[in-house]
Length: 224
Image (cartoon, rainbow, N blue to C red; front, side, top):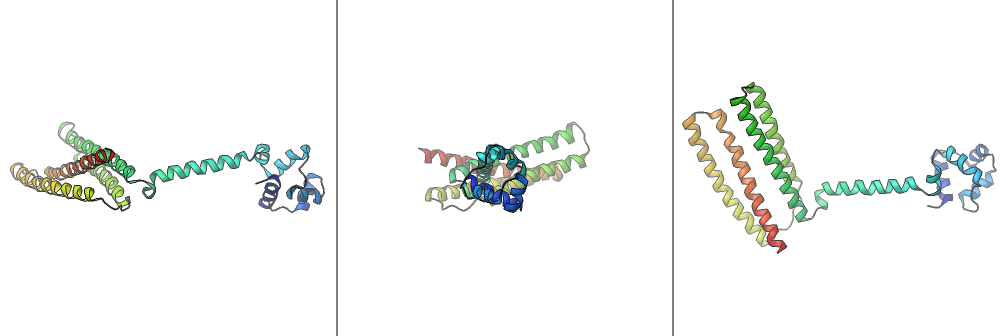
């Protein structure tokens, strides 16, 4: 945008006519018209009054620095947006994001279980408070995982990836079956049904770890 176009746009934003601008700057309407059509440029002594009238800096008027900064900020914001937008991620980037989400969520589960155990058995804190905090932490971890996997766009899977998914499903089915058996055995032996349900959380953690391991192994093979 040249100087004349910029002066025209600034005047329109202020809802001023050429006559009004001319009166405020003590020039003729024809002079203002010539500025806006690039037939002439404002004299040096009119630059500051113009900037004060349009409430801009001299750098913004003459160099457009503010506009450039705005465009740069918009670009940076778009970049940040793209980083969190699954649609703009490659398959490998999504796998890396999955690893981050799963690992951090598993850490939340571990901290929640440790907190519940120490809080009730060692510190003797109020079990209601401990239980509520425990459920909030678990819900937080589960929500992160569910939100992540629901946000992932569908990619066409290669034959190797489909084969890998079948193996992971079989392994996790076995882990789930063994976990349920362990749950009932321990529950009947200890009769601590109010605690043993935590086993299902541990099963879920193990299944996510299995998925993560196979996913990372697949990445290594693709790199080779």
